[in-house]
Structures are given as C-alpha cells and as structure tokens.
Image 1 (cartoon, rainbow, N blue to C red):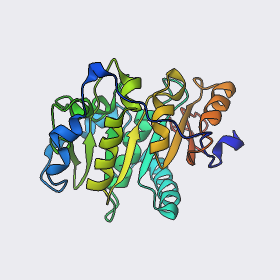
Image 2: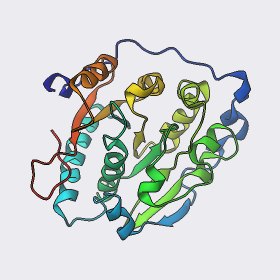
Image 3: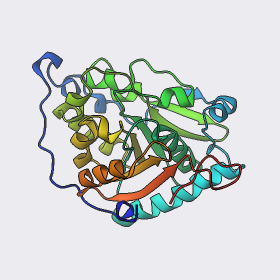
Image 4: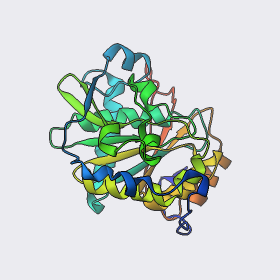
Length: 271
C-alpha cells in the first residue's frame, strides 16, 4: 500500500478519442454553454440533513467525529493541490462498493464550509451516477444533457445549500456510451469550459471505478490529480497494483482506505 500512496504519473498520455458519428457533432460549440456567465444565478436546491445522514454524508457541519475525518482529508488534499495550483481532482476506486461517491460528496461539502473556498462537484460516473441520490437532489439530464447539447452548462449546474454553506453540483445521468463520451472531443470542450468559467473553484469529479472499463483511463490525462478510494473487504492487493499501473502519470494526492473498523464508532478511516 505504501507505493500507491506516493504521487506517481500515468504511463502515457491517452490519445483523443473522437465521438462516434451516431452521437452527432459538437454540442458545446453549437449550444455555447459558456455564453452565459458562470456567475449567473443557478437553480438552488436545499439539502436535508436527515437525508444526508441516512446516506453517510456527514461533512456538512462541524459536529461529529466522522465529519472531522473528512475535514482532515480536506486539509491534506487542498495543501497538495495548492502547491501546484491544481484545480481538477478525480475521485475513483478500483472496483464498485468502495465508497468513492460518498467520499467525493463528503470532501466537497467539507471544502464548501471553508470561508475562502468554493467547490464544484461533478458526477462523471456515467455508468452508475449516484451523487444526486446521496445528496437528495435531482436534475434534468445533468452532465449528459450538456454533452448532448440539450442544455447549456449554466442551466445544468445546481446550487446545493445546507445551513449557511453551499456548493455547486453538476449531477450525473446514465449513458450507454460512457466510454466513448469520456475520451471524446466534446468532453474535452466541456472540461475546458468548466476550467475557464469556474476557475476560482476546486472541481471534484466523481469518476467510475477504474477497473470496470476504460472510462477513467481515457479521462485521467485531463485531470490534475487523483484521489483513490479503496474499500476494506472490496479491494484486493492485485486491484491496487493494477490501479497503480494506470496512475503512473497522474499525481495521487491521497489514498483513502474506506470502511475501516479500527476506530470505535467510526465507519470511515484513511491513510
């Protein structure tokens, strides 16, 4: 496990994968989501503390031991990203069931509580998007509606608030062409729009599990850094080694070991 904790770089830059003809032309160019200001008012949704707690989303407030674990992770991640002026953080796991989406949601909420920080959480798990479910919010197509040119980016992003704090969320939606979208020019254009229009924000991308397809491998070269979430009882040593092989050119800011039972009364632990 020690070797995967180090910041290592991905073996080679992935070639740009063009989207199939069946998916059409470039909707970002046609629809122009960046034509509307990123500072324009977003649709606001209020988060429910009861719903968050029921789904293990605990970092929205300052009370509770479990939330403090995420605050510690937040500080370590931000310190690493600030050193290199990084903006894009990919959150992934070797396989399903490791808790990557729970970690992404908690980390984003923890960052949102800092007075001089702001965050955008993007659900890019087009195979099984769960950010909206965990937060208790919906969305009319989310990121897929932007990729397909059915909605501008500014109308797909939601302002999710609880108490005095809030963050921006771009919900996900299921696509049968997940792999093709990840490496497409349209995805590249969307990421460039996000980088430009939300340049003052840390952007957290909840990606699919790394070993279930080539989605993560396709998009990693467009990320600044990665957070790998392993699950006790779900992740094997061979899984970690395989992920390490794919993470040779993407800096790994932290490895989270989820579902630890070492601390009494805690379901979450990390290195």
